[in-house]
Length: 145
Image (tube, rainbow, N blue to C red; front, top):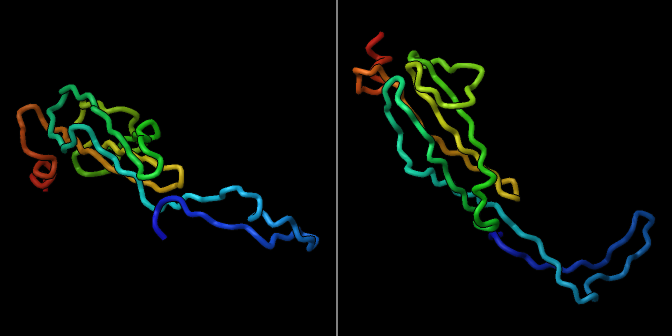
């Protein structure tokens, strides 16, 4: 079955007691359901993974979301953050903002659900390195071993 509107006819309806109800197909009303099995798309604005230095300033440019049935659902995007220290260990509790005050990697996760419950997640990664270091966080971790 493809996404979109599907027409149907309702007939031979009985209540719990077994009484036949009026045949609704003769009421000249159109009945339809929307089939939506396609997840929305997320477009991360100015998408790229970044390597920034300690104490740099970062302002997230956000994202937009579009669904094949619901259209623009950018207002439904939920943003969450993960932080991995310079050894790759996930920090808990998860941060509520991006602060470039420690080495490691921040992940900004964008999640959106359409009205049918289809879900899409995308992420932007920000590597935070020493002020004098322009290598990636993977290089920093491998140099410690």
